Image (cartoon, rainbow, N blue to C red):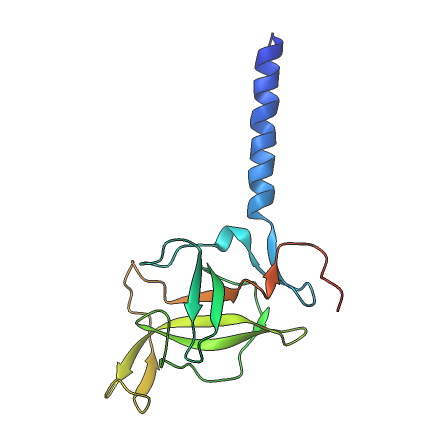
Length: 157
C-alpha cells in the first residue's frame, strides 16, 4: 500500500465488512420490553412470497404486516396453545401464537410443517413432521412488524 488510493480502498473495504457484520448481528427485539428475539441475519423469504415482509389477513379481517425469520434466540418466546392448521397463511404449515418470554406481548406466530391426518377440516388430527423437503423449512416464525423493532431502546408506555 504505497499510495493513498490503495489505502483508501483498503479502509473502505474494511468499513464495508464491519458494516455488514454489524447488520447481521443486529437483534430484532420485542418493542414493548426490548428483549432480543431473533437476529436480522435470520430474515428470509418464504417460498411463494415476494420478500421477507408480507401483509396477511386473519379470519377476523385484521391485517398483519409480518416479517419471516428462520430461527429465534433460545427461549426468547413462549407458546401456550396447540398448533392450528385452520386459516394458516402458509399452506402445509400449522401456526401457534408466539409471546415474548419477558412481558408476554403477542409478537407473532411459529409455523411448523405438518401433515393432516383425516379430513382437512378443524376436526382433523394435526401431526407435526419434518418432511425433509429441502424447499420447505420444518419451522419458521412470522413476527408482527408492529410488535418488534431493531431499536435498542423501547418506546415509553
